[in-house]
Length: 119
Image (cartoon, rainbow, N blue to C red; front, side, top):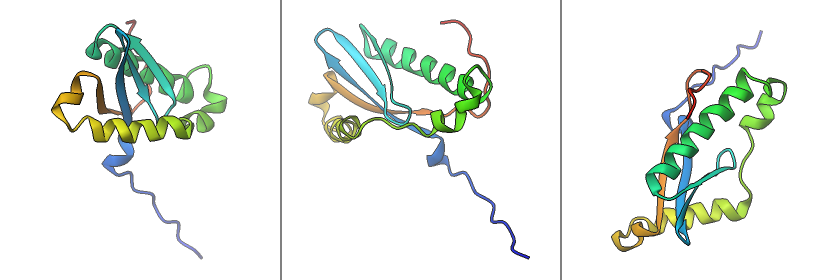
């Protein structure tokens, strides 16, 4: 009888790769692991909006209206062009002078699907 190997969730599995880029006078924040984006006048506000969008996305995929398609939704990735842009932004954001225009960051995958509070 074959034993089933347990899958271990590593902390890296819980991190969602994101970046933000100043486009004109708006910050655009993108999560490449779910292909989500948000924009705002400041980096902090764009990041906050993206975080809220991630919470709703995960909730809907796991416990909400889109539960029937949850597996597909949680495995959805951004197009290759956005993934490449993330890696370029990640490299550029290491230089202090570039942080005024681009920033890479991680958001955490929610551990349990809870209906997010209104923004």
